[in-house]
Amino acid sequence: MNPGSFLISDGGRYEQLVVYPLGLLSTGVIFDLIAMATGNPGFHVVSYWMIAAGLVGGLLAAIIGFMDWLSIRSGTRAKTVGGWHGLGNLVIVLLFATSWWLRSGVDGNVPSSLAFILSLLGFGLALVTGWLGGELVYRLGMAVDQGAHENATSSLSNEKATDGRKEQRTGRSGGP
Image (cartoon, rainbow, N blue to C red; front, side):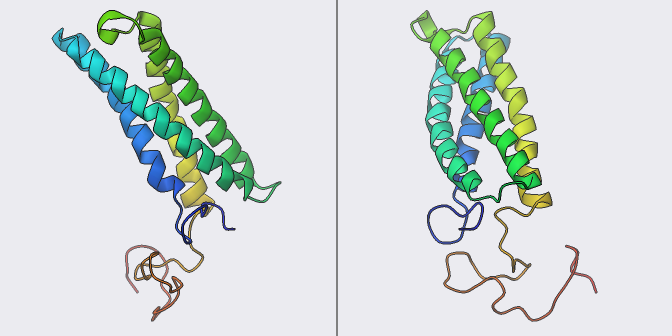
């Protein structure tokens, strides 16, 4: 199994799943900020449910990410970076889960100072783990098809990425 290719075909599914929890959890923080800026407590309720949905998605992405991490060869920089990426994402889920729990049962799901700070810490840590995920893909080549190029066939086709390649190019500019 290629790293980053757990589940359907050879396309990575972790990459498709991770955008939802990141977006939902981050938007939860934004809605809390909007509630604080406008004085409209309804935005705290929206934040509460954004965080709840983000936690569900985060747990699903964590399971698939862990399966992908297991497929990376031991003793490599990718295994180390992937380990920190996964550990950081687990901490993010725990920070937001604690924030969500502290809001539960509170009228209007208004976060305490601690609950809000935990969300902000999770938001900030997501920037770091997002960079680590980018490092895995763009620098270390995890979840990148070995024959990838600008005119590669769709990952949904039965063809390899190298099929139909007419010329070898370097760089992204498409120049000579």
